[in-house]
Length: 329
Picture 1 (cartoon, rainbow, N blue to C red):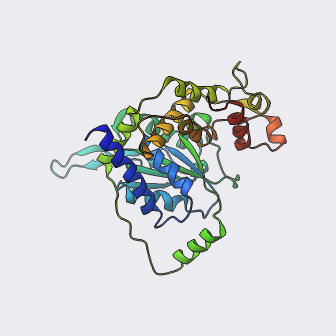
Picture 2 (cartoon, rainbow, N blue to C red):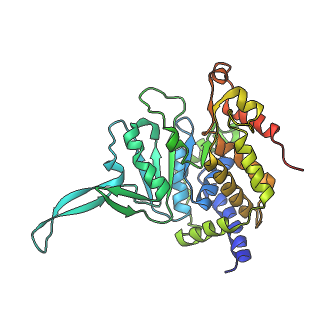
Picture 3 (cartoon, rainbow, N blue to C red):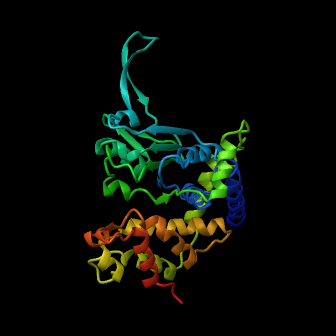
């Protein structure tokens, strides 16, 4: 299958994924779109939203329509790293009668791992996901184990509950491609949710693609060429977030104490390539790049005291940033 045919197949399957997920997840089209782009890039994403907005149900649904192994970990204050990665156990060999060490895989050994309420567990346990998210492997007692392919981590976080939580360190936040915000639905969609979830009818979902096809799509996304001018625009947007740099925007100098690293530019470009592919294009436009700025930068910008005291949100700062770094002519 050549690139053009594969691109047509990707666009078609992207639309089918949205339709199939929509049988169970009502509304939240922007959220579903960003989750799908995460799959096409092979990244990890953080879902932010108050309880009851179907964050867990969404990821479970995605795993069904993409036909991937799914694992859910409920993060709690007493969760240990070995509860995620797995541990060595002493077992008796039934053939020899001798005791042997055997590795018991943890829930991280799945294609899609849902880290539910990730900020409810201490940093030591949060760090157990770092190697998995970045290297797609885990190390236990000096032994390295590869994770299945493809592999994704979707983490959920409740933004309004602070008691008994542990803020994610910047190093781990930076490994999430997108911060996806789930908000309350419009009244008609909310009524549709009530009607659908209080009846005996259940949506029957059909798998749209499998692991091998998804990996092929991920390879295609990375092969999409990036024009130098478009790449420079993505980098200019990221460099404008760094308050101490010569390239800093006025919004960054005024509201930020810390900006985004080069990893943000990488994720903006990858997201833009995936966005282009879902539109059937084998090139990246300025519009593709700018669509990725908000979800990529949202969790990477650290507001200063002035912004917090004046209740300036990160989204407002990004709006100013986009205005200060306009689309090139």
